[in-house]
Image 1 (cartoon, rainbow, N blue to C red):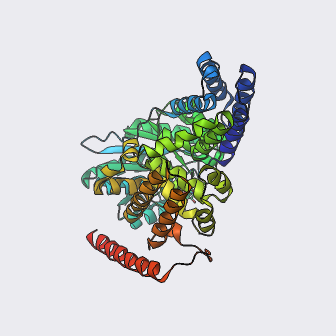
Image 2 (cartoon, rainbow, N blue to C red; image 1 turned 135 degrees about the vertical axis):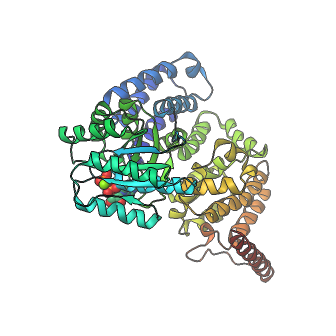
Image 3 (cartoon, rainbow, N blue to C red; image 1 turned 60 degrees about the vertical axis):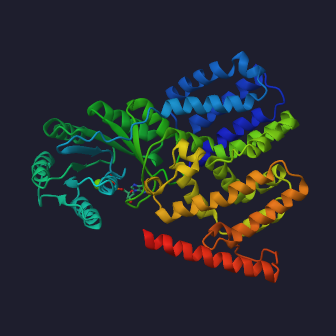
Length: 491
Ligand SMILES: Nc1nc2c(ncn2[C@@H]2O[C@H](COP(=O)(O)OP(=O)(O)O)[C@@H](O)[C@H]2O)c(=O)[nH]1
Ligand SMILES: [Mg+2]
């Protein structure tokens, strides 16, 4: 996700990080790199200029230059400005009591039809009755595609065989949806490969005659700079209420998101993160900024900077842990670091005595698993991440939906966090011996968790357990299994 933008921004910050003392000169150099990174990520020139102006003004302020941890502050400024640029958020659908009409528009292949299905599923999950209308008469296959999705979800689909006037189809669909008592009618309109006057006129006709409550522009994140041009054209022709950006699951150039937001001025409501019908998430700028900047790595990087700038500040991480401040966000950072082989050395230097554990984890098949875990944590609110205790069943259901995973996966993650948190806390402020003990506890805990996929090594870990340890492990595992079965029955 956003790999290229992320890497570029990181190298920009690394340039800053290498400096023991920041000057206006090297700050400007680093900001130039940020600028290049954004341009290369297909963020349009105007957006980049605006952005850099704002960031420079703040970053070159005296306060930052004189601060103890200037790099961290620059990262924070970039983070804030990116959040501003992507916000404000409005994932609400503003549903009214009677029939709500949503019109989806966008170029061909942008993901309109799929997104119709995703939205219908999201509504269904919230006990709202959707209705779909096949208003793409450009290709016969488009109508069938929507019917397939409708059948999959058990959602009715309105279509007219041999119809040639999409405006009429939409009008008829409105009547039918009202008759059927649907709450939301979603219009799947036609697209073209490129912007086309005839298509725009047709969409304008639908907008004028059907008066949809929400016109959403569906745009493919992979189209880069072209996304900006089509966003502009659609925004000029229609009264857009929101943007849905699809295909953010691929290795896309994240810049399009920034630019589309900038040119349309309407909120980005949802993001598509896969072909499946549950792969739609409410858009959250914080999460996206974190992704763009690669905050997981960034925090590690900041720690490196701390070491370079002031060795004493290394103690801060420990203080945080000792204060019991190990949040789910920290857990996410940990997951990312532990499970990325390349970051292992960095991790080990941060926590002496991590050697055994890292070797063990390096053998696990956990990359895919990590993505899911991170998605789960990203779907939590800031409050939930800080105080995981409040994550009750209904929150778990919501989080699972947001992350596109099963509730069991959320349960599992919370459990892993519960295992990890006390150990992380106990590790802080201990000498070498205490740390080794804590790490052994951690290993045992991880290995005894029967469903903890991140703990199942593919090969030999080189660690042998005593018979007594094995017995204990077995007992614990059986207990966990029983508990898991009970949980599953309960759902
Ligand atoms: N990976 C991924 N593929 C998507 C996403 N949304 C749509 N697609 C795929 O993009 C292709 C075009 O989607 P479709 O809904 O037919 O686009 P339309 O022409 O705008 O209706 C299909 O193969 C979809 O499965 C997404 O969020 N992620
Ligand atoms: Mg379609």
